[in-house]
Image (cartoon, rainbow, N blue to C red; front, side, top):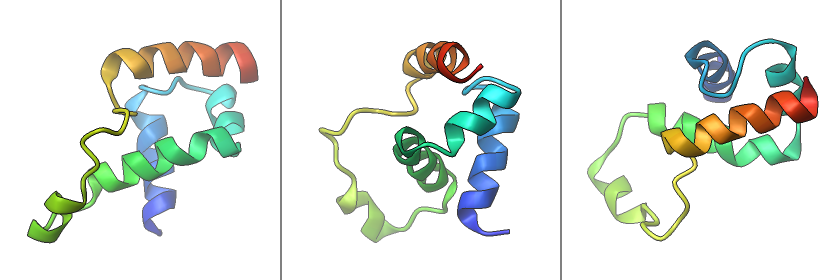
Length: 79
């Protein structure tokens, strides 16, 4: 299983993005790609070089409050 396939499964199992068919419809959209990349990167083992590549000004896509709101949007849009 590649990193993105594992990340999709982990995203679903976490429940942070909602459960059920709405999640699977959303994860196939372009809008889900940054979240998938952020989730995959968050799971990946870090190295010393990666620390300097972090964009500290970037929006925290995995912020729990943001994810709770996103899960509601996913269900409303794709549910």
